[in-house]
Image (cartoon, rainbow, N blue to C red; front, top):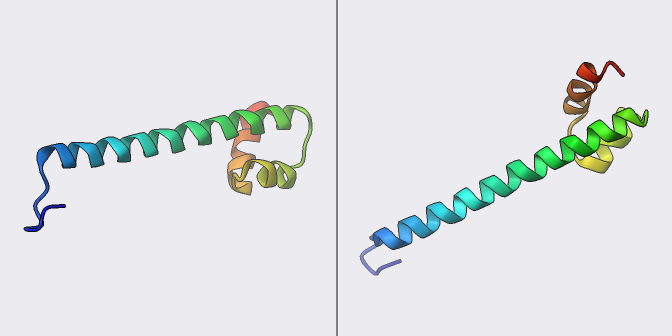
Length: 70
């Protein structure tokens, strides 16, 4: 950051790019954990075990289980 507390346009773009990358990574990671949870649901794994393995909340696991009718 500059001494007068103003950022250049390039610095702002760099920060926004980094934030976007981080957000995209988090979204992708969550989607992968949801896919893993669906596989574990099909294997008849308990909601508690799935939540522990995937770090998803119990409510999220239950939501994923509903459409699979399991």
